[in-house]
Image (cartoon, rainbow, N blue to C red; front, top):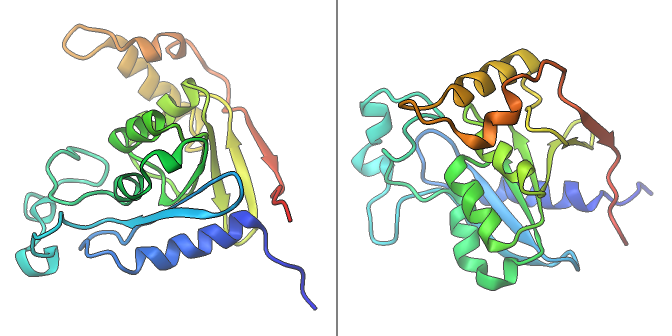
Length: 207
């Protein structure tokens, strides 16, 4: 008889199924929020607001304007999977874990922080990484889950696992400022040159 799968794998599997309900033309993304007792308190998937026709019917404005993934996220009619899950969960998300098929964007990250989520586990990276930087800076546990290896990679610095050089360049550009105004969250990153410090660990699922 095979051993039971870990809690992380269990919820990641559910997250992928939830994403199958998505109506987005680009990505099918699901999210699951659990509490400290490993109970599901809410799920969500990305798609247009209630009462609005699906993108399959009306088309995708991001595709029409050829907007690259991870940029100009304000030009989109869809509600993200994380946002829908947080709306469903309400205060029940406080202290819980959010599982998502894709790394949260900056807007979702700010909502995750204010909802009181303590841990975020995602499967695939996302081109825009400011959201993860912010969550790490504010003390959330942020981990990437590798499905085939059944392991998590804990992000313990501002730099992402996309690579130290890429992270360093983003930090320098951000610290240089936007319109002459520096982004303070990146001030301490501009001179970093070391590789990302991550802790690889096995799943710590309870009974």
